Amino acid sequence: MKTLAKLLFAAALVLPLFVTDAAAQSTKQQIEELQEQIRQLQIQNQQQIQQLQQQVQTLQNAQQQSDQTLSQINQKQVESEDAWYNKFMAKYDSGFVFESTDKAGMPFKMKFGILAQIQGYVNDTDDENVATNFRLRRLELSWSGIAFAPWFYYKFMIDPTSSQLMKDMYFTAQYVNTIGPRIGQWKVPFNKEELQSSSALQLVERSIVNEQFSLERDRGFTLQGALGAHNNFSYAVGIFNGDGINGTSVDSNMLYVGRIQLGLGGDGDDKFDANGTYATAKDYGLTPNFAKAPTFVIGAGGSTLPGLNCDVKEPNGGACDRIAALEMGTDVDFSQITGDIMFKMPWFNIEGEYDGRWLNPSTGGQGTAYDQGFRVQAGVFLLPKTFEFAARYAYIDYDTSGSVVPPGVSIESSQWELTPGVNYYLSKSHKWKVQLSYSFIRNEYTQNAPDIDENIVRAQVQANF
Image (tube, rainbow, N blue to C red; front, side):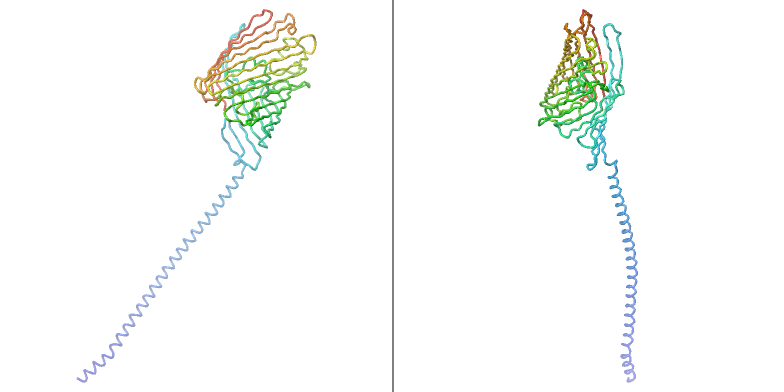
């Protein structure tokens, strides 16, 4: 018993030692396992950190490349904006317009326009063969605009179908509306019918009065301008060669011309058109129809050319033919007056013009001839802005007094014209239209010479763009 008790006592003393050692070994193993887990996590985290750092570097490289690309694009845009071809604007505005947009650079604007008219006619004149013909009536190519300064205007126009290729070439310096100079070749500021654009004629051709009394185009210098709050009053005075279109003055007998005009009412567009054939407010331009509101315009003009010698200088119109018919010689004082009135509204328009001419020879006992003429013209729209009926009456009274006409000479004593017509405006304006007219013209003579009648039918299609 004593021996058993000793064994039990010894076991009680040794057993805790074995348990403590086992527990110590288990804790160490756990620590090692935890440390291994920490090491594995550190390895994994380091790998993730490296992956994330690589992604960050990749994104940074991409951002840097993007910034460089954007910088290059911005630089190219700046360089492109500074390029000359990005400082111009092209558009269509009643013609092809090429305009500078560089506000800091030189102002420049050019409008290119084309007026094309193709005409067919039948002319049955007494004692002549009946003539049937197609012709290119006009092919006007024009360039106009500003250069160097917003107040310096130019215009250049040619017509390859005409015997006179050069039509217009002039400069206008209109720094203020009230006064500005113009120099070059253009329509002389005289009678209204001639100053109307060929693209805006209400009938296919102008009247016999215009053919006889107009001064058409010439080379010279004028002062022009407009007065009034709405540029109602306009004027032009100048000096010209007096030798007609593309003519050259070989003497010092010049053509002096002036015109004044007053306009009332209108559409509200009172901007001064300094580069127009006759410079005036746009409301009071000389187009005979297409008014948006009632418009009234009245004008007058005068011209003189002292000492006209038609052997060396021939102004446009019928003056030199008349001087030759009256056998007045080579030194004739030539003067003219004109007056016109126009009223137009959206559906109706009417206008009238009077012209007078003095031919005063300086030699011999021959008297001064005074020839005069007038025309009345009206139109009514049967369909608004589309279909129009128009008509014109024109009359010329030639001076046939005994002190003017040489004895025994038969000359024209009078001439009159009646012309009705219809217009179809495809563009609801003068830009694109078809016209048809019939003219009866009678020419009467002195010395019981027979009258000569003309019957002319004309049809014309026009495109102006």
